[in-house]
Image (cartoon, rainbow, N blue to C red; front, side):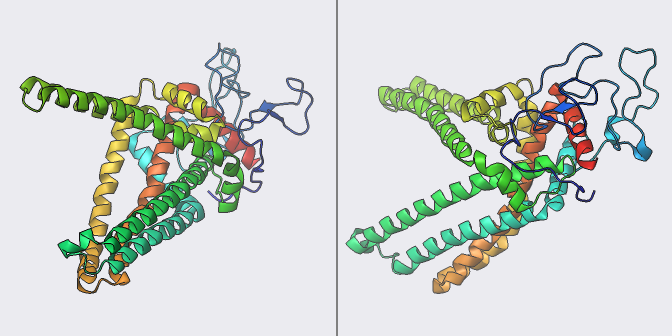
Length: 400
């Protein structure tokens, strides 16, 4: 699908703005008028009685314009009328972008993730490569500087010298700065990739400039959400960890009962943390696409994942397993070669070669993982909120 002739305008009202009125019509609800939300991803009302609106302005029996092959409409007449669906097109055939607008299977999600990378290469591949190269290059320079300044670090006596302590502190400071840069860069990158995938579902190829214009107003809230999720995760691990320390201290490492209790607390903490991660996995996506604040995004993610935790967990885990295996295969040769070069000469070239494998892996896995998560979110909303009809309407408006 080529780029739409009339791409949407990216402005501050793109997400969560007031409803807009189509040209050539009267007031809302009047003859020749039609209202629709500023974004297809804004939360929609629940299903209503036959003959009334279905999560927005599109009604049963309305057509979607040019979505069907040969101009065939999706739905022939209004639901509840004297005539029935004589020109129904199967939902699987409605595919304005990277996915069919219907509930998705696992292979649909994976195929859509691959298509999203090819669909908007500038954002999904080019921008990701730039961010990864810069951040990993900083890490490589910090690591090389540490090895260069501690070339004789193999000597045990060097660990007690002031210069060694200074070098270690300098290395930790540099590593902390590089991790902070990583966090900032990848949080912004996630927002841009999320928006690009969401637009690709309705057939719009997003440029880097368009993605940044649409997402930049959400960046502060995205950082706030990242901090809030970090605090929630820390509390989820830290509180049980304190309980674990108390149990170990009380048992003194001698009682079998205390040891079993400690193992039980550790297992429960791990399972609870895992459950919490996938309950809140859609919060950043909700914040970017629906325009909600950090707290509201967390509540919304909690609601969306209700009843589908195992599906989200299973597909996400399968994705991580496949990508992890591919990344290891790609990185193994570069790690071996880089280690040999670093051991032999301690040169920057060896460090760069070791980082090359990680760079290649991240350039592909970062956009693919983001796309899978966004498509899981879209799939869930198509199943429960009729988002497929909202997306079909948005696609028809772009093509009109």
